[in-house]
Amino acid sequence: MDSKGSLTPHGQRQRHEHQFIRIGRAPLPLRRGHIISDTCKIIACVATALCIFQLYWIQMIQKGHVRIPNDPFDIRFGQDISWTSQSLWDDERLSFIHNAAPVPVHSHNDYSRRIPLFEALGSGCISVEADVHLVGSDLLVGHGSKNLRDSWNLRSMYLEPLERLLDLQNAAPSANGELTGLFDREPQQTVVLLIDIKTSGVAAFDELYAQLQPLRDMGYLSHWNGTQRVVRPLTIVASGNAPFESVLGLNGTYRDIFWDAKLEQLPSILDDFSTDPSTYKYNVSNTHYASTPFRNAKLHTWHNPSLPLPSTAQQKDIAATQIEQAEARGLISRYWDTPDSPPNLGDIVWRVLVDAKVGIINMDDMGAVRQRVRGWGRN
Image 1 (cartoon, rainbow, N blue to C red):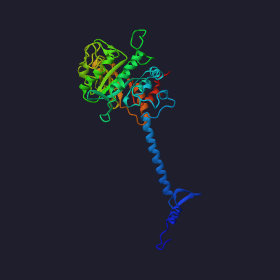
Image 2 (image 1 turned 60 degrees about the vertical axis):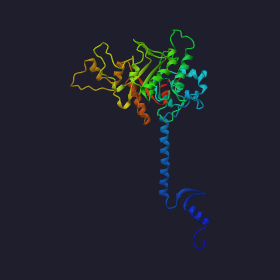
Image 3 (image 1 turned 90 degrees about the horizontal axis):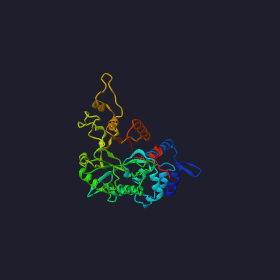
Image 4 (image 1 turned 45 degrees about the vertical axis):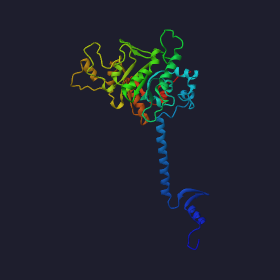
């Protein structure tokens, strides 16, 4: 101690170390006289760290970042492969894609995946979705208008790969003379490309129509020929800001872009119930999907027993569930924005929709598709 009574640095260090409980020479983070309060602080810190880790883990599960052990897709399409990799076109990987078992699943926001289109097809999805923005004279792919890239465009990410895949599938004429689709197990299964237009509707629709010309020239597009729907390997559906009038304005004897109607608004004053069968505003000549957020779902109906049962065709249509209304019009029902938190709630919603006979299941996690629906390919 110096003349002023203060401790030397060495003495201060010894005094500080003496405050803590020690086991042998190792100090514990517990101060003498403060053991209970220090223990509570340590427990609180550990609990907080565990909660943060658990939250992060749940988010990774919901985003599909936690994969299935020995997932056949992940084994073949490793982290070194992206949607621009030439190795995507190796015979082994193409064989895996074409041998997928098709399942009625829609790959929602498909472009957000590490390998857009290919992971959905390799999981057996028969429908994929791309959000597009008209920028200049091109359709750029992305959810929002920020961070769009010129290289991430509809042609390079979807239209050209689909054309190449179909060209390879149809390199040799089929036995029945019909075009072969993307799935070898069900060669007549069409794949839907849902284009959600985020910007100017009419101009973006016109650009989409123009960009489809190579696929149109090859005869790959499903179309309405004036009397019936001709199903081909690829079906194009326009959604979002795409105008219904633009769909109706296409050639009435060759319409190859179909509408995504609002499932909660299918009944229309233009529906005609005086004919047999009834005719509807939204029908197979102009519409493919009928979609709505899950919060708008009407999966069951209730009838007041004190009132007479619906008797006319119009009354029965109004009283029907949304899925029944879509089926009556020849449309495929789809619910998006289904709840996924906590994770088991998503499972419950899927089971409810399957039991209600929904047309197609909207999915974000392709790992879950492969694990639960078993849609993956086999070599």
